Length: 163
Image 1 (cartoon, one colour):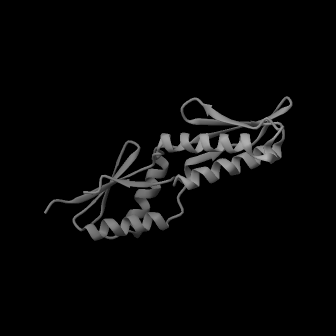
Image 2: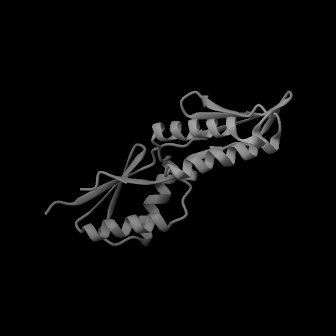
Image 3: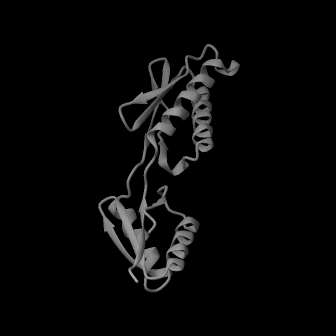
């Protein structure tokens, strides 16, 4: 019998993030507590989101609104990295980025975790920004998935290509 395998990736569905951003923008334009603060949220390039507001408190509230919309769309908070509000003249500006892909440093941590605490007979292989996990037993693969879900890692992980 051939080995069963799956891939560990860290990807964000851009369309879901775009939908969350549009919902947040609509809520910011209609909510009473944001009236007169010129609070906006928009894409800045492909992987960055820029928020502006006339006060720092309203900017922090806008971040909370956007994060709430992300959570409702099943996007992990580990995938969005919000910076600190920066004063820019009379307005405050914040740029948040979407984290995609598994860095080589995080891949080493994940491989070590699987090797140390995972079932015996499980093999891992780093392939660019994803990790392939293979084993003869499917139960071992499910145990690895449970282990990684329970681990406190800095990246949002998804499991794909389960065969």
